[in-house]
Amino acid sequence: MRVDIISIFPEYFAPLDVSLMGKARERGILDIRLHQLRDWAHDVHRTVDDTPYGGGPGMVMKPEIWGEAIDAVVGAAAAGGEAAPEGAVAPRMIVPTPSGRPFTQEVALEYAKEPWLLFTPARYEGIDSRVMAEYGFRLRVDEVSIGDYVLAGGEAAVLVMVEAVGRLLPGVLGNAASVADDSFAPGTMENLLEGPVYTKPPTWRGHDVPEILLSGHHGKIARWRRDEALRRTAEKRPELLARLDPDSLDKHDRQL
Ligand SMILES: COc1cccc(Cn2ccc3ccc(-c4cc(N)[nH]n4)cc32)c1
Image 1 (cartoon, rainbow, N blue to C red):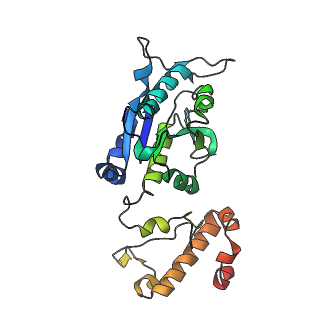
Image 2: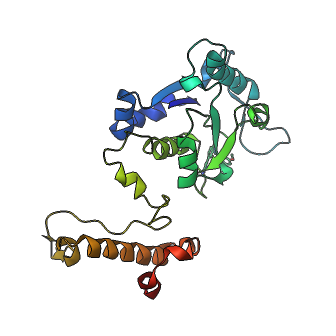
Image 3: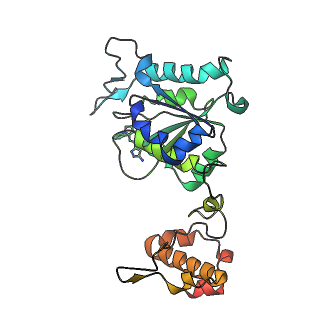
C-alpha cells in the first residue's frame, strides 16, 4: 500500500519510522511518502492560509496551494511520471476533520483494501471547502473524525488512522490471528471489548492471575474470556451489546 501525506508539519510523522509501521515500511508492505505543503506556496513567506470569507475567528487554508500539491502528488502517477501502486490511477483522499463520519474499525478495514491512500491533514480552521468539492468524485474524498473532541490539526488523526489501517495489512502483525481477535473485528467476538490480559509471574504484589487461565483447559479458558468480554462491554459500552447479532449469543451468554 502506498500512503501519501501532505502537511505543513511532515516532521509530525516521525513515529511512522518506528515499531510496527517502521518495520512494515522497511519490508515494503507500506510505502509512506511525506510532502511539505509549503513547497507549493510561491510567495516569499510560503503562505498557506488566509482570513475566512464571512468573517469569524481563525484562518482557512488556501485552495490554490492544496490544489497544486494534490495535483503534483496524484498527477505524477496519473501522468505516467512514475508507476502508480498496483495500477491504481488515483488514491482515496482522506481528510481528517471534527465534522466527518466516524473513523471506526469498519472504516479501517475499508481503507486497508485500497492500494493507495492520500491523507490531507489541515491546520488552522481547516481547508477551503472547494478543495473537497474539486476532488470529491475523482479521489472519492472521505472526511472522517477520529472522535468527538477537537484537535489543533489533522496530523494526530492521520497517525491514528495509518496505524489502525497499517496493522491490518497482511504480514504486518506477527500473529495473524490477533487481527481476527480484535475488538470490533467481524467474527465471534465482534463488537465486544477486549477482556483482561495477564502474563508471568502468577502472583504479583498479592494479585493472582485467574486460576482458569493456568488450567490449560482451552474450552473453559475461551468461555471465561468471552464472559469477561461481555461483562466489560456491558459495563463500559452497553450500546455495543445492542449491535450484537442475537443469534451470536448462546444460552450461557444470556445468563450473564
Ligand atoms: C475543521 O473544523 C475545526 C474547528 C475547530 C478547530 C479545528 C482544528 N483543526 C484544523 C484541522 C483539523 C483536522 C482535524 C481535526 C480534528 C479531527 C477530530 N476527530 N478532532 N479534531 C481538527 C482540525 C478544526
